Image (cartoon, rainbow, N blue to C red; front, top):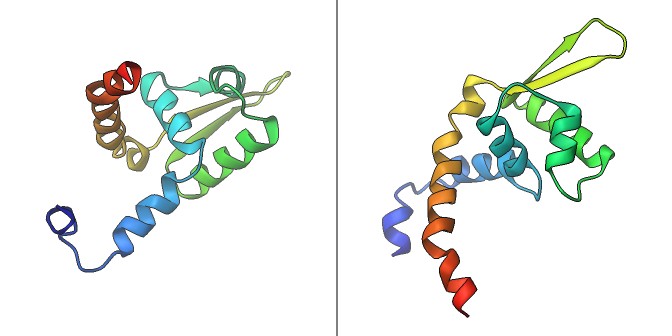
Length: 113
């Protein structure tokens, strides 16, 4: 089975993709931005259970650095910042949807065990 999915002898593309989405929080952030965009910082914080302010800030900065998300700042008091998926980030949506479909297809196995 592994030979069928490992159609590329060079694993760099896989490693690159993994470096973008790896970790506990990045896919959750991408998922939320795919569902509703733009999203303010506070909304992200409320909807990602267990994430700290520092971790959310770090993850957002990393995703922005990789051009997966964009950040729009409004010059007002109090400050207003919104996050959204860039075209590069939107190209990850099929991967996120495939993960959702896989989870939907297999979640009953966990419930029935």
